[in-house]
Image (cartoon, rainbow over all chains, first blue to last red; front, side):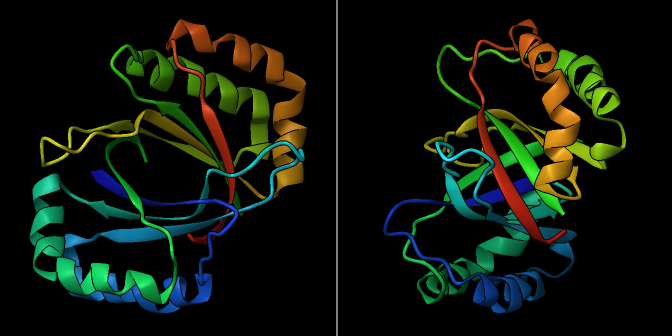
Length: 104
Length: 104
């Protein structure tokens, strides 16, 4: 299983519409990808326990797929539509990481 | 539910013993935290599909807890032991993010 983490950097001017992301963007991605996306998760930054701690990412979404090939087959044909939706919920440019899930 | 993400930066000199992390470090953390840690996951960076892509983190571990208070109650008393184990598997200093799980 692989995990595609889409991480939106935090910062003083960062904004992120988590309701739009959770209720519209990510369900759209799942619908477009179909079974190529097994499931997904969504996190949003919490203020950490100590004042000096600053969350590096305002929000993150993670897509779980059987393989990199499956991800590319599911995401590739819809890249333009999916990326084009980003300005509807944030002014941040996401950082992407593809990982292998060692413990899931 | 909250998620404590422990992210180890990648880099030309980064090393990470994923077998030690998966088989010794993370089981130790879970045992020390007991029920304060509901479960955990472990990812390691994959070379992404395109040569110009570079994974920002060589590995990540995620602890899932009921609340920040539960995390602090479970982790706090063992911080020294847990942090002291880091040099046994990596030369990298982790970045921590505490998130709320919106979709789990």
